[in-house]
Image (tube, one colour):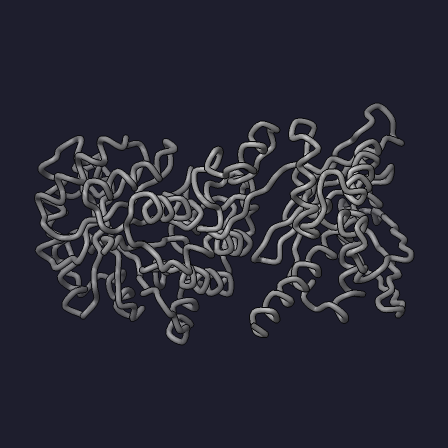
Length: 533
């Protein structure tokens, strides 16, 4: 059987320190459930009692059922010169009632003497006393050896002695921290191997990405014998972030043969990444390894031809293993034959020579002449194909709309109002809304009108919005709007073109909502067929 590597996620603690992230208690609970579903073994929930938000979060954790993960509280060793029983930080860890605790202590003499301003001997006593105190309370303790790799370079003997102190206290695992993120993979490998040989208990790795080596250093530590990997699910963290578990896990499991997460969790890795990015209010980078929408996207004509003959030619793995999918991008360098693949997803009987195919391609050429660019907007292409082939029935129609923008006197912000008339199954609805600008107001008005018929569109959120002027040099120039949306599980992009930026936005917005409804309809049909079979 494959050797087990425990996956330890710190999105709710280290990840929350990333610039731009501010989790509410509800956000934290949603991330917690997503990480549990992703097959994470240990979830570090944060520092109990450090602020009112975390106090409420740890209180609510007691009633949250988890199917896979164990919860972990975080804190530090006792302060110099006191006994553990008098240390408020350690008492808060006990009160958190989590089965696991991760406590950090110094492994670098520089930090002991210059930052803690205590003696090397007292630091070792702090480590041993603190670990022993928590283990005697029935808590499993992971010791985070802070600045271990820097300390090992300065004084290998002292860095290793800090691990031995934690071992004497009863630590279950020694996590070696590349806190500054400046170590190289060969340095991590050698120091990890030395720690394993010296201590004889499980060792983990906690890498940061300041040198762009968080994943490489984590894999090097596992090659040296580490059996726990700490990181954050999408690499979120202070400065350049933490080691990225969404890249580490598939590398370990699919390439190196280790057992990290259940197979069904791995097959939903991309879905988990989209959901966690959405909760974190970050746009998931298309170039994110394994889970980004561009991770298996092909644009060059020769590449596409080779991939269609054999995916192994330009793909390092089957994207479905991590819940992602292959994308063939339409562009001036991809070749017009690319559209055949999308057509065949809807009607496999059609070929390049079919009249229907020519009709679709003529329509695409016409739209490209008008300024459309479909690279990265495959959702709009799929809707267009359905329309041209007669496989399309609109979920709704926008019959009329009006947008009014104004800047109230003495107010620096631009407000807008929108009125939209839509029809659904012959029933007309007029809806109005105010928003931060005309597009936002239009979006709100449409949702207000449609939610009664299609409540699932409440899940849809705009994640990216780009406007490009096509004919430069005049205020009447055409503009192209590219809109990226998500429902928390999937990402899709749509495009609209017009001389009016609001109308271009409306075209993309309509396509975005229709594509969501189409996705849900097709998903329900698949589930029905599976049930019937």
